[in-house]
Amino acid sequence: MAASQENESDMDFSDNDCYDYNNYYNDDDSDVEHVDPMKVDPEYFEYRCLSEEEVERLLNESVESLSNCLRISPTLAKVLLHGHHWNSNEVIRKYKDNPSQTIIWAKINPPSPQSIMTSNYYTCPVCVTPQHVEKFSHLPCGHKFCKDCWITHFEVQINQGISTSISCMAKDCVVLVPESFVLMHLQHKTNIREKYQHFVFQDYVKSHPELRFCPGPNCPIIVHSREIKAKKSICEQCKTAFCFRCGCDYHAPTDCQVIKKWLIKCADDSETANYISAHTKDCPKCHICIEKNGGCNHMQCYNCKHDFCWMCLGDWKSHGSEYYECSRYRENPNIAHESVHAQAREALTKYLHYYERWENHSKSLKLEEQTLEKLRDRINEKVMSGLGTWIDWQYLFASANLLAKCRYTLQYTYPFAYYMDAGPRKELFEYQQAQLEAEIENLSWKIERAETTDRGDLENQMDIAEKRRTTLLKDFLDV
Amino acid sequence: MAVLPRRIIKETQRLMQEPVPGISAVPDDSNARYFHVIVTGPEDSPFEGGLFKLELFLPEDYPMSAPKVRFITKIYHPNIDRLGRICLDILKDKWSPALQIRTVLLSIQALLSAPNPDDPLANDVAELWKVNEIEAIRNAKEWTRRYAMDN
Image (cartoon, rainbow over all chains, first blue to last red):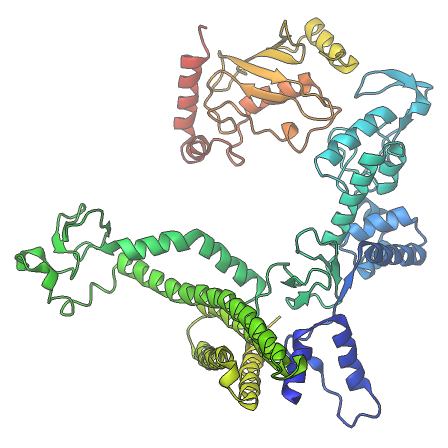
């Protein structure tokens, strides 16, 4: 029973569990010595799921504390924070070091101030309409434009999705328009104003390393963690599981860059690669890649005109008419090892080896979801016919969930191995991978035959599989 | 047709009264936002002696958005592609509402004098411009003679 409880708490990795976990170890009465949760569980990750309001509060707190600390306006504090990835310490250090230069770098003040014209009437350079100076406004750079032109400028920019990076209208002027300036001009334009605020908020969250939007469709949740690592976060609202650092599907033990490379490779190459593998061979003489585009096995290389047999790649001359009984297949196994084409094919074989396993586990995950559905029906039947209670059968769900979790990790070990350099570390990895693979297949087999498997036996198997998984992650998850 | 903004009227008037040397821009009879432009090839450039036709269109939100400009005459230039589209920063992200039709056309004329093969739009042209400038310039002159003269 202990094993299943442990596994369950592992699976529902919600905020509460983290909290309990901490309490557990901080408990004074406990005689368990303090253990770093990272060492027990390499995937341990503290994070919180926040709503937009909570994030706004969080951002405002940073703005307020910076503005108090440096005695600057909140507007200025916000722009400085946004420009420095919300790193208050860096802003404070730079600002104390050289306040005026910091403000110029943040594109708030111009490198050299402009002379401000002082007449009552002035012609706006954009709409060329002469107007009273009251109708004009300008940023610290002193470039004056009439308020109507500012408003149109903001509307056009905002409709293109631009918000925090809107700059002054003057030619070659880099000064950024602060939020307060935009909002002041758009005070009577509710729609565009709301759009602007929405975009600004998105920009803030995206520039904040401790925040990440939940990638679930239309999900408003934002995950917050002080630990900026490629760890698994699960959205409390839509249950999407994703990597905190890159926002993609969780991918341990593979890291963010490698998984991206792998997924691009799969998207680019797989179709082509499968085709090449199925329909082409290299010419045994000149090693150019040949596509078989007809039924006849008598091939003539378009490059070197060599006649050969598609089946055995032997010279056609020695074939006569009995080529389907091709006996030369094994006699001619090595076709020029060093050739570029042979190497390319070797590379392809290697890629396909990993890709096929990656794909296969992905398919198995989907099939096991169906198994889980069937399991649900069978348990239903059992409970209805008086064979135990709901609680008695929960361990089966726990085992199915654990199986999914283990298989998921196993799937992501393949891109990791593909990009690994050969050597003792890769040997160790592949050994552990094979162990995990074996235990997962055992577990899958036992779950499919759950009713006839002894519960203790199944729980034992769960424990073994999860141990293999954590051992592999402890040794190789490096985030 | 909506009322033409004062800004466009003023710019058009000035283009007519004080034309930029080597550039003519005339609004279309039926659409005051569409200009027929002719730029003469700058002296000491491979385009010298050529007359290059362009079209210039002021979009609805001009001057908040940049004008749309395209070469109609074929031209051999690393920053202009086969469709006549121009790679010029002020027509894209460096656009400022304070810029005008005349400043845009002057920049295009300057681009003819100073091609920039490091920021190419027409890759094959830019490539040749980098590896064999003499031949590239010969091509540009040839195209100028063939497409931008005597019509």
